[in-house]
Length: 170
Image 1 (tube, one colour):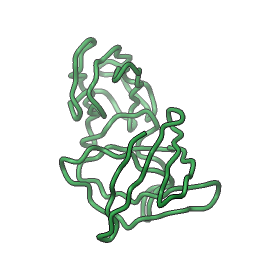
Image 2 (cartoon, one colour; image 1 turned 45 degrees about the vertical axis):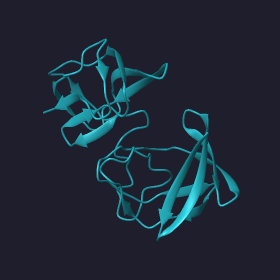
Image 3 (cartoon, one colour; image 1 turned 60 degrees about the horizontal axis):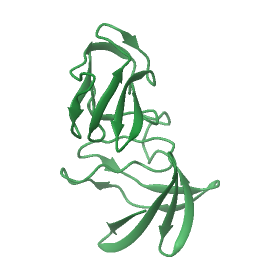
Image 4 (cartoon, helix red, strand yellow; image 1 turned 180 degrees about the vertical axis):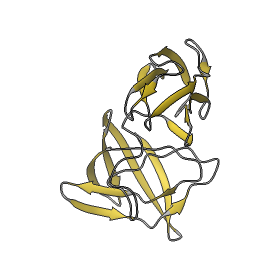
């Protein structure tokens, strides 16, 4: 279980998050426990986020958008897209961090186990590109957009850090 202290409009709140499955979490907010399903995530530096916790068909909590500090650990967006967001997710579940439109970066430190794409290959959003092992778990990273792969700076067996460039698109 992880405990986060978040500040909303100057007021601090503690949020406990327990991972039930790979994309299902039990979240305790203000003494109320809710089950949350992660439908999409992006790890973007300086991202504007609007967290929304969805229980069944109703939205339980929504916070005003806030900027993530540059050095803050990445947090997945939970729930439905925020106001003005595209109804189509920007990255499929299991995808990596996107530091720019043309790159896929490591969403966490780990070791590259396999690479299933190659330079010059045309890929569709959601296609598997590589497998990153982190904390004894295999994480399949997928293309965040349609495109042609320009290069793959990552190598099988390489140790990567959060934010390291893994795949470059044309």
